[in-house]
Length: 340
Image 1 (cartoon, one colour):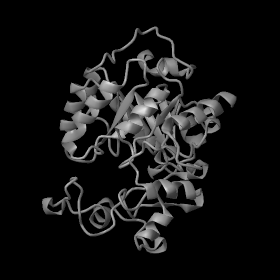
Image 2: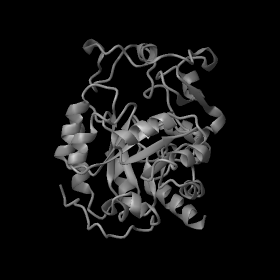
Image 3: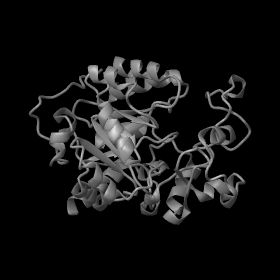
C-alpha cells in the first residue's frame, strides 16, 4: 500500500460537495472532483482505465472477474495501490455474487485494504460481515424496489439503482420514479445508472436525490479501455436505436449492440429473448469444462460469447463521438456539470 488511509471524519468534500458529504464517508467524498463512478464493465475496465479515472477525480471501478487469469486479481490491486496516492479518488472492485470464488476474492480485497466494493447479480448479504468488519463501504446494485429494500435490510451502505438504458445487465424502471421511491425508505448513498452521457444528466441525477452518477458507455470508447478497437469504433458509430434489451445472452435483462449481434451471424429478431440463466450460459457463456478453456482462462466453445464477441452498451451511446483519453471524458463531464 502507498498510504491510501482514511482522512479525519470532519474532512470536507472536494468539488463534488453537497449532501454527498453526509452519505459517503468523508475520506472518500473529499477526494472526488466529480460525483461519478466509472462503471465496472466486463472485458473493458482494467487497471489503466481505473487509474486514469481515479487520477482525474472520479471513482474507478472494475469487475473482479476481469483479471486473467483469476489469480491476477492481487496483482491488479498491487498495481493500483502502487500508482495511486491518498489524494486520488478511490477505486472500487465489483464482486459478481452469483459465481464461485467469491470468498477467495473477498479475502484478497481485504488483504489489500480496499475502501469500497460494489456487489452485483445477487444479494450482498454473504460478503457484508467481513467487508464491514474491515471498514469497507459497500454498494449493492439493484433493479427493483424489492431488491433495494432487501439490500438495505441486509446492511448495504449504498445502492446502485439500475434503470432503463443502463449498459450490460440493466434495469427497466424510470429513473425519476425509482430514485424518489427509494428515497422514501433509504437515506444512504445512491448511485444512479442508466443513460447518463453528459454532465447535465449527472446534475439532474443529483437533483433527483442521487449522490453519484454511474457512467459506463462513455468509458468504453477511451484509449485506456480494454475493449477491442472494433468495439470502441462501434460505440462511436452507434446510436441508442442500435441498443437491444434482451435476456438471450445472460438470462437477465441486458442491453447489447445490434451491430455486434449481426456481426457474429445472429438475427436479433430470432433470439430467445426470455432465456433463463442456464440456457443463456449454455449458448453464449460456455459449459465450464476445463478442456474448453483458452490460455487466458476463457471458455472456448466455438460459439459467439457474450461480452467477448457480442458487445454491450447503454442508451448513452448516442453521446459518444470519438475515442478519447479517459481524463478527457472526466474533464468534459466536469465542465458540463458545473455549467448545469
